[in-house]
Image 1: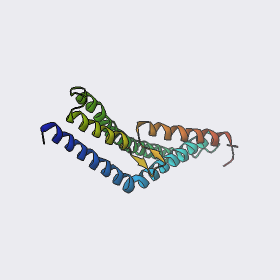
Image 2 (image 1 turned 180 degrees about the vertical axis):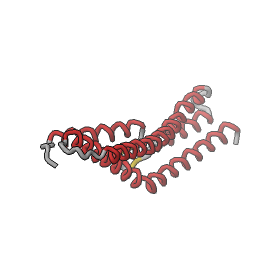
Image 3 (image 1 turned 60 degrees about the horizontal axis):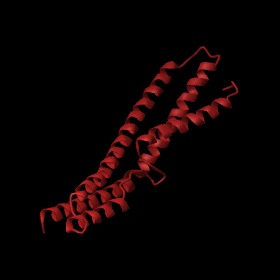
Image 4 (image 1 turned 90 degrees about the vertical axis):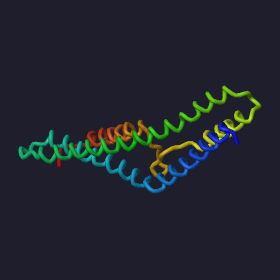
Amino acid sequence: MNCDEAGTKKVKDLYASMAEIVETFNRLFGPQLFLMGLHCSSQILQWSVTLVYNMFSDDKDDDYDRLVVGIIYIIMMLIWLGITMFCCDLAVVESEEIVTICYRIQMAHPVFSEPYQNIKNLLYLVNNSKIRFTAMDYYEISRSTMFDLIGTTATYFVVLIQFYDGKK
């Protein structure tokens, strides 16, 4: 076994084990990530509606301390959720970099050579078993997921404000 073949086999084994680890991660932590996103969305909605209702209320007994604590809580939750989503996305981007590297290495070998075929097999594995983090397979976790979550929450917020009748 020459150096190219051993290296290709090692990369293939590492990629297969990484795919297995990500699958296990999704199975173990997918429900928690899903519930964290749901909880974060509902908290943003609750505190923003409370803030707006207090802005339009006639009560002079404003509870701004509670609102400030709620807003700080939401910001901290968004930071935690954002870091988690960013790290998951970073792992996916790095796994996709393998394809680019393989194509570069493959171009250095003749088409019918053994290293070329080994890299072609590795590319087949990488292209057919993409690394992706999910929250219970409802949605894929990436950088844009945070903005999707905030956008959806903002939509519901606008709907709730439209139905506000001024009475508590």
